[in-house]
Amino acid sequence: MELKQRPAREKEETPGTFATFPYDRMTVERFREAFPRARWSDERRSWFVPGKTAARRVDRWLVREAELLDAHGDSKGRDAYAFDPIVSPYLEIGEDLRVRTPYSKTVLEELRAIPWSRWDEDLRLWHVPFRSYEELRRRWQRIEEAARRSEPEERKRRREATKNSTEQKAARLRSAERRRRRYPLPYDELPPLGRPVATEQYGIVVFVKVSGEFVEPPVLITFYPHAARTGLDYVWGTWRPATLSELIATWPARGEPGLRDHVLGWWKPTLAELRIARRKARSTERRRQTRAASQLN
Figure (cartoon, rainbow, N blue to C red):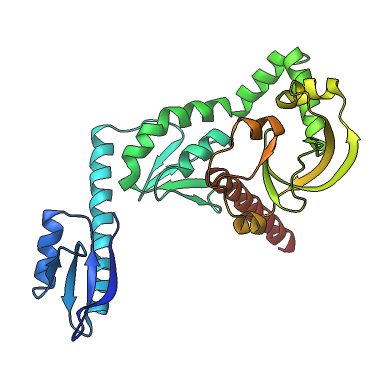
């Protein structure tokens, strides 16, 4: 729910401010009780509160109203939990909902998408307020399944089952190729150096050098299938991960990448891609800072 106010003058000689909030009968009643001189403006679709101190008074009321809505949402969430609780070893109940699981990218993606969820670095768990219980419940099956797959014993069982398999050997080769930090780039359509671009294989990266060495077809077929059947000539480019500051400074593309962009293997990143990359970069930066602080202590 968005609550906001903006200073304004309804008429040239009338100081005051406009207040905007989603319609709710009880909220309107509380607003009219707090501001009996307020009047509705059809033109602006908001309430006008006259007075030289109106902005401060409306701002304080909006803060109290937001706290009231949060408390009401938490109360509804507690009732929903009591009626239909999530029973799981990964969920603890206290003043809020606390989710503690083994590390899993899927779990991270699901919890980050829940409103008002936050990571607690000291306790190594996620806090989710009761007002977000319904969203947590909607995502819980996927969260719990991913957590179970990430348990150490389950990981060990899968490793043993796939030991020396064709899939494992292929995964090792892909991992070794990624560590080389090279990428095939179309000879005639190279990306800008030193600027973040999105890639077909490795997300958003920054290319720092183009070697001019042509990529052999067998390598394309094995590791870069998007470029294997295009008939274009590719040369090796050297890349590095984009920094958080570079990702923040990058303007997103206006539209989604097209078929040709995917054939070329690189494109200007979209806003959705930048948001994901920025979240990951922030997490990496926090881990780096935490390690540095622990070493100093």
